[in-house]
Image 1 (cartoon, helix red, strand yellow):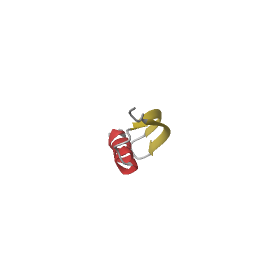
Image 2: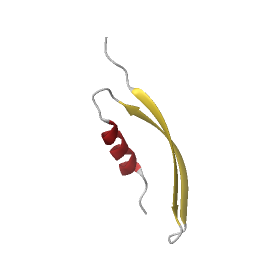
Image 3: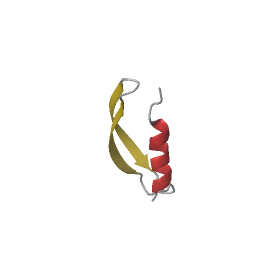
Image 4: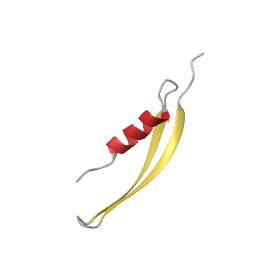
Length: 51
């Protein structure tokens, strides 16, 4: 029987007052059993919007 992914919920509040950008995002992330927590955090940071 295969192991299932672990589900994490993240809430991001992003603010850049110099550029007048404020954002709030709620995300659901899945951590596969063969993936490290550091890689999941790297995926989360790579997703963050850049303006």
